[in-house]
Each structure stands twice: as C-alpha cells, then as structure tokens.
Image 1: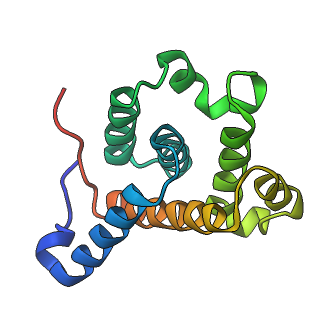
Image 2: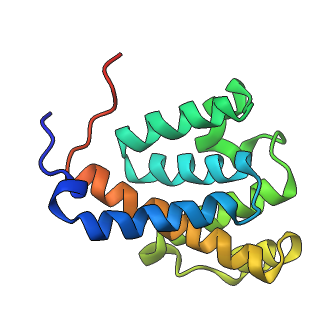
Length: 147
C-alpha cells in the first residue's frame, strides 16, 4: 500500500497544531502507561497500522506487559486492568464508536468514579486526538517502518 499524502507537508500549520496537542497531553499528568493503552485501543478499533505499531512500541518502552497488550481487545474478559484503566478503556471505546454508543451514562459514571474533572477532560482530549491521528493514518495510508 502506498502513502497517499503527507500531512506535515500538505498542511504544516495543522500538523503543528496536532503536535501542540501531543505536547500538552504528554505533560497533562495522566499516567504514560494509561495513555498508551488508550491510544492503542482506539487505534485497534480504527484499524490504523501506523498508530498500532507506534503505540504498541511506546507502551513496551513504558514497561507495559506483553500479555496485557495481547489481550487488550478483550480487556473486559480479564482482571489484569485496574479500575482507572478499565474506565478509560470503556470511555475510549464509547467515544471512538460514538455513533453506536452515544457515550452512555454508565461509561461516563465509571470515569467519574476514578478520575478528577481535569483528568476526564484530558482523557477525552487524548481520545479525540488519537482518533484524529487514526483518521490521518488510515485516510492517508501511513505505513509503519518495515519489519
């Protein structure tokens, strides 16, 4: 598959704005491991190979357990994820699949139980940002580095 477009070249100011979001999110205070799980789960749902490769690699760099990465699509079926991770993953799925889910109260209430208002805002910004990156990745056919 061949890359269709390079966002950085085509819209440098837009790309710079997206990077600005990433800089904010890197410093927002959410746990690095949690952020990578969220990015990876949204990228799985959206089928973005470039982002899957990047965030699985980054998750490992942050000490993520290989077995947890393998079962991430079935995270509800195991007890390996803590309450914050479970709430964040459910919120990620709800917002990534927004037309189907309509962000149910149960998922929002679960997030409210374990995250502060600022953390909920940051988590939601994280989910929105990775979903935007996924759309660039899939839409422009970004390719991960060769194996």
